[in-house]
Image (cartoon, rainbow, N blue to C red):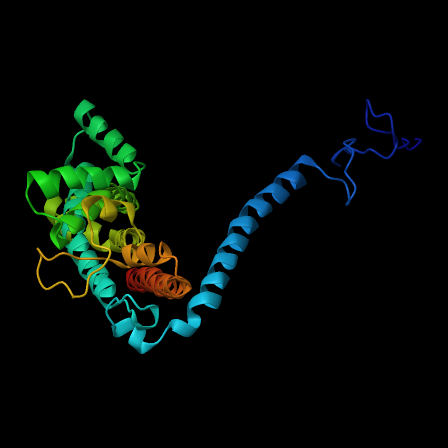
Length: 311
């Protein structure tokens, strides 16, 4: 018997295409130097990343060049003066510290409690949906509107005056939507199966939240809160609206004391015509940037530490 000859795959026009091998693609490939839509999009994204960074570096460089020599211990511990070389930021620094402590004391418990209720207890419905939509909208409201609200509600209606407590309450209103949103996102990272396992072991809802859900979501909650406080410490418009003083020659000693803050002091100096006050403003900007950098570093450190403990 004669041996059968090897034949090509049925329906194949080229002898090199055998059964089981992938067919050759006829799609043309672009050359290495060809500008494709994907490469154009990557270039646009890279440009969108580099331009803000370049602008930030230029601004920080200008502040360093103008205010680095002015950063001394005397500048940090002196009171404002009409002479630029004698002026300092002690009242503004103390006012910002007191303002952030009061703001955190007001915003964190209320914001975290609202997030826990909406995420763990609230039933889906029109009222819950209405509250969630309004919280999301309030997070994008300009800060000047919170200043107007604080002026009418705290300064005039509640008769707090232009005090430290009124300023902290106004900034707490500004932070509440952000604290609620970041806390809810952190609570959502806890798997539902973990909650169900707690219920299966006999724990009620509050025990599950207190002993399991909150410890697991704490890194995200703390990170969001600290970053929100870092934003609040640089806010100027709400404080100007409620009447924070631009010249304070004393450190606030009570909740009802008049106050100033670093952004207000910087705004006051930069609006003066003398070049010496502009140097003071640059030094104040460096101090404010350093404080915000510390806030961000603390947030990153706390998140890493809690993640290692939970791992």
